[in-house]
Length: 229
Image (cartoon, rainbow, N blue to C red):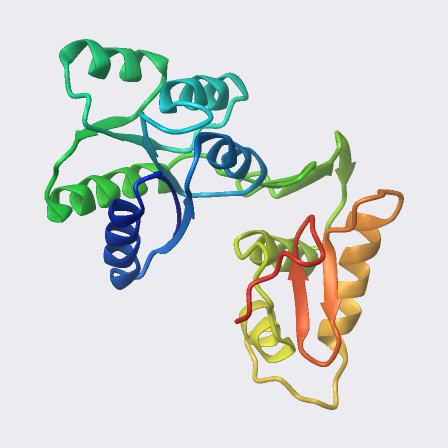
């Protein structure tokens, strides 16, 4: 599960990030409002933890913008402003929950688990740049153009999009998509990645599927933005 934490207080951000990572969650931190909003709009997260008092753009503005863009990711507001008026404002703008600082980590964790359970029951659309993948209908589109995928191509694309920027090795892809140990004598992974790349990237100036020679593949809208696995 991927969580975006938008928090400008370094110590608080590090405390929350380390605590959630210890529970098995992947946590990405954005230290200001503009960067947090950009990440929430361009990447796929299962949950967003959003501070209210942020530099460059406050949490209420980000929340309003994300809901206007039809981004339905569960959002928990984190703030020292715990007045009834602030709480009501956040909920009216589309927040799913509100946690007032200071809070016990156990309480935050309980809220996170609760909203992730609810979110898993809802329709999920994975996005990267102008590429979208509906995990319910299994339909893909890029810049509004529908892309026809085979069953294996869909599984491969979904795995890429659930791990944006992560370098995925051929053995890892073989095990995840085909369910078998990688045979270095077969090129099935490369064949399917090439098929998928033609459907996803051909005709578009920004390429999303990248190769790191001798290591594997990763999906990103920036060639350099990959995370070692």
